Length: 306
Image (cartoon, rainbow, N blue to C red; front, side, top):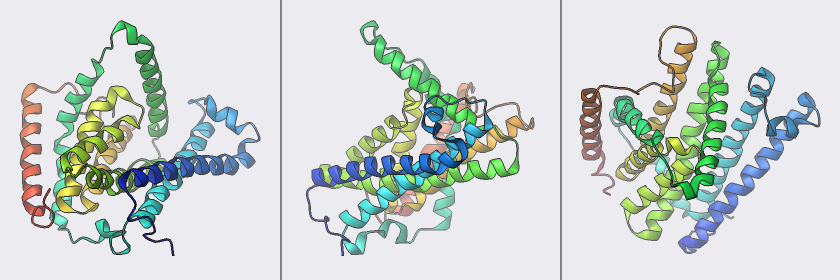
C-alpha cells in the first residue's frame, strides 16, 4: 500500500509532492467542472467563465459549481492524499483524533467573533497600502486581482433565499474550513515545522502563504493575522478542530451579515462589518482576544506545547 510511502523523505521533497498534488488536483477539478457544465452551457462554457457576467444568475451558479469542485477536489483531496502518502500510518489523521474539549472549541469560535473589530482595523490599515511609483505595474495588478475577487465574493453572497444561504454556508464556510485547514495547517504548517524546527516560523510562513494565495492583497493583513491565530490554535492543541471551528466562524459571520443586510434586517454589509469602530472598541477587542488566546493556550498546552 502507498500509505506512508513518503513519510521518510526530506521536507523539500515533501513540499514538492504537496505543491504537485495541489496544482494537479486543481487542474483536474477545473476540467471536471467544465465538463459538468457543458451540457447546461454548451461548448462555450470556458469562454463564458473566463469573462463572467456577474449579473447573470446562471453564470453565478456555474461559478459556484466550479468553486465547490475546486475546493473539494483541488484543496481537500490534495491535502488528504498528501497526508496519506507523507505521514506515518499511525499519524495520518491524528490531528482529527486528538481529544479536545468542546468548551475550548467554543472558545475558539468566540475568539473570532470578538476579533472582528481588530480584523476590521487591520483591513483599514491594509487598504492604505501604496507601492512606490516604479512598482506601479505591481500595484495595478494587485488592484485588478482585488477587484475581481470582490466581484466574485459579492456575486456569491448576493442571495436572499434560504436555499441560496444553505449553498453559501456549505461553499464558503463548511468546505473552506475543512479544506484550507487540512491543507495550510494540517499539511503545510506541520511540514514547515518539521523543516525549520521552529513552530513560530512555521506559523508565520504558513499564514503568509494562506493570505497570499487568496490573491486579495488589500485583505492580506487581516488574513495573515487570522492565519497566524489558526496556526497557533493547531500547534497548541495538536488538533485541527480548533482552527476549523475558528475558520468556520469567521466565514459564517460574513455570510450571515451579508444575508441579513440584503434582507434589510441590518444596515451593515459584510465588507463594512467590523470597520470604523471607536478606538475603545478596538482596544476591548484586542484585550478580549489576548485573554481568550491565553485561556486556550492554558487549556491545551498540556497536550501539545509549542
